[in-house]
Length: 468
Image 1 (tube, rainbow, N blue to C red):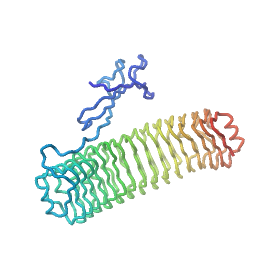
Image 2: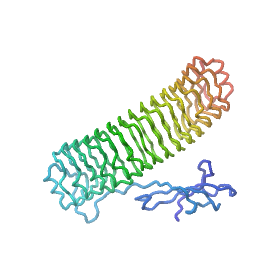
Image 3: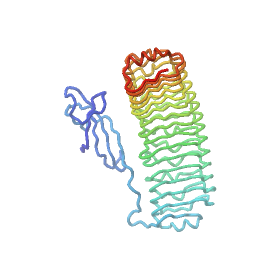
Image 4: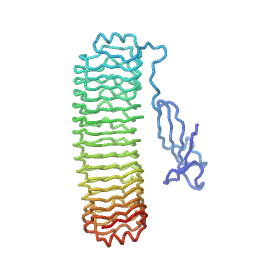
């Protein structure tokens, strides 16, 4: 058993140093960081992060005590021509069926392969070609309906791009890839689904599916469980109505669903974590988002989805940023287990938001920005919030008369309270003690200046005070 590092975590507390520092009379949760060899968990090796309860109280997390493991996997090694392969230096450009005969017996192209602007409806078979160390670019071939012909191609060192092929309906040859930098399926207006990609259970590189005007579903991705080392993006597929093919997807480095005008639901039933961000943006018909298994996010951005009415993320515990911005129909948000955000928390221009449940939220590492929330009448959804590491801005929250619900808030970095039409008191801030920077209370027509001055006098303000 290789032990690269071991960290101690008191049950329910924050990560705190190395193992062996805990109270020996209590059970502790340990975190062990190991080198992960090449195998089922990480194809090219990486790092394993294991957690579990130190049942035998020896301050060492034994294999038998591990209850949860996560893996940070190394990227694929550089794609090269294998020793002994017949190869040709790239770039290689193919324009006619006759050109394909030049690849007879060639197993590797050391460079790029380009098939651009041809009149080919299909590709002559090139069974010998296995590796392209650079890019594969198949673009602007109007009659092309299939990528068959390259079914022996399994490794692409950089990007595999299928773009602007107006008749393309069969992308099954892409499913033969075992290693690649990224795949881009862009602007192929006859493509209706992603059939042929069923071989992908994990994607080591990136995947972009965008601007395919006839694409209605993601059929073909039913077996996809993880995205590694790069983003998975579904952008501006105007007739995409179903993403149920992603029901097995559990994690991704980055996941973006944006500009898909016909999409109404986002059925990510198994999705658990995203390392960089989950972005759901500008999907005109999207009315409901439920992420029942989602626990951890580098950041969560839900912005400019005009039909979105409900957002439910019942298991989310930790996120970097949380930004809910300009979702003009959003009436209800539920993230009842979210305990901490490491960066900013923004509720911005949500004119229908009346119910917000962030009941477990204890601390915000960065700013809390609340702007244009005319229906939100109280801070009841923030009942356990005690600290805001950045600025606390409350602006144009016109249903708020006080601060009911913020009874545990103790300190903020800066505080700006402005343009709140009904605000008349600071009732509810029963534990509030300190503004680490500036305090600004201006342009609240029903808030007496004397009330604001009394509030400022009762707390510590390190910076300047501006009241009018």
